[in-house]
Length: 304
Image (cartoon, one colour):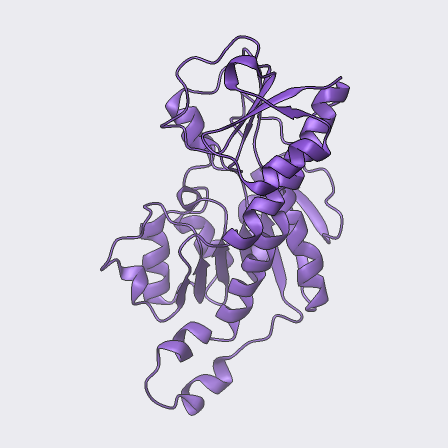
């Protein structure tokens, strides 16, 4: 079956090619079977034609979509979960490795710090990393960590074993997992129930030698608790690509902490984004046309 796909508010050459490769045809919204939406919830159409049976979103995180009330049960909605996995996993491991190697402190230095820092530099080899939220991104970090000599403990909702992890636990065991781990990468979904999943108690469980990396959503970590732990040495370092408030305000304490490594939500780099999304869209168009399950279907109850 040839399906008609609308791409709004704007397309890219990569998406155009994906539609063609999948054997579909581009169409206006009023004549389309499905919609690929490349914008935000703010400018999403108030009323979709009833013939639109599937909406593909550009983003992996969908909390803003649920907050806007746009997502409904009258059609299937898919996110971009899995599309950007490899790039974000690479960024997570880069933040962890750089934090252990004290790159933030050295990059800010204006004098030679060898005697002060040499003995404090640590290797990732031999360390155990808790993957909090072992979805597609979390799972993709595991082979990268293993290649650098580290091991991973996975935390997910189900407790079902995660390939490559030395153990898998449910979120009910989070504090115990953090106590066993040296470091933690936060890669879980952001929902109302996971807000401040990592607070003062969880940071304390990780301990003063630990590094906390967050490449998921800023609201998963209690920023005040994190800043306090970094200032007092209750946590060794943090590598952050996401923040509770974005852009992170000028003058925020995180900017000047020598043990905080910050990147401005760039773990999914623009040069790769269009191609990665296009591959995801092509896969889903083929599945949609064949009546097969779509990738990254949004769960209305879990809200991700």
